[in-house]
Length: 130
Image (cartoon, rainbow, N blue to C red; front, top):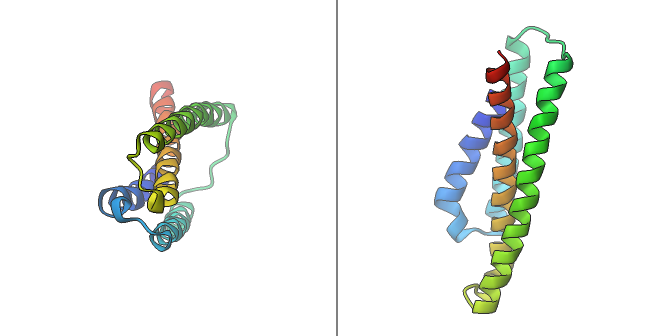
């Protein structure tokens, strides 16, 4: 979980701070590829350096709890994003030439937040039960 959280923060924070305002499809794809590569490297290092760990009922419950929280965050975020994008389009705040990239960035931000909610929920559940 810490590896996934680290990879997410290493890739997403610079993207949303420096790139999202001037996003292009190539930058979005590059960020996704960077995240995939970083996840593979971090998960490989974690798997090699830690002992084999069997999952028990507690692990499955914590994982399910995290996925549930992430799902609710995703659904809420998507509905809010669609409503806000619709309102911005109606009010004329979104440039029609950049509407697709804007839409991708907003939905991508929602996906990132849902993933972070899932990971943090799982980490908190492990700490509370420990």
